[in-house]
Image (cartoon, rainbow, N blue to C red; front, side, top):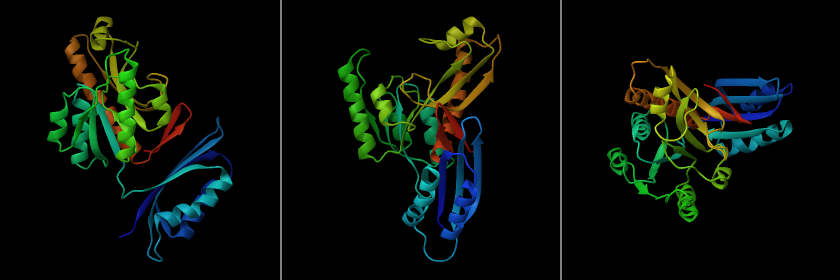
Length: 289
């Protein structure tokens, strides 16, 4: 059976990039299954994702394909990655008390519509241990401590980083994890932590956001999935989902609609990240769907 790889790259835009990439892949013994590209004329930057398979001939390994492309990448000043599609990314899912996003992600994983390996679920409350166990996934309770307790937060984040290292975690999913991560932790995992939160216009912060939305008579509610940065809820956006609501909808109705939006937006974001379709572009993202 042929092996399949995904190459992603970004670099300063100039002529000859596509030709150089295609020529190398052809000479290396690859057949292009899918290729997408985007040139940002304002920023002068080029982005590309290429999905290839090996063709019959001399054995082509990941290491040889990676090593050979390094010279091409250096010539164009590329930031690039090469991924073997047979290797499922390993995701650590973090939760608090709400289980709708966790249940959805683990169901999609079991149904093989979401190709990720989830070796562990971490909760800052023990409430969702039974849900994780029902899906056959281990659960670890890592208390975050009371708000304003910096030592407890440091212990919690220290354990998180230990787990990321011990379990060879590729990225972390905050599936309604209701604690703010420190700027130091965010800086250690740039582009590797995905969060989901409700989205309203106007934005309602604090407790009972759906009750606030009901009081203000909002007409649209939704959810935003984004990468976590030290700027709270302002990281690069991966996906957003919206739903139109009615004046007759109760706060409980709005919350239920919002949970559906959160599930959908987070699942898409995790899938696109796992399939290496998301490229960071400053505070923005380029997504090859």
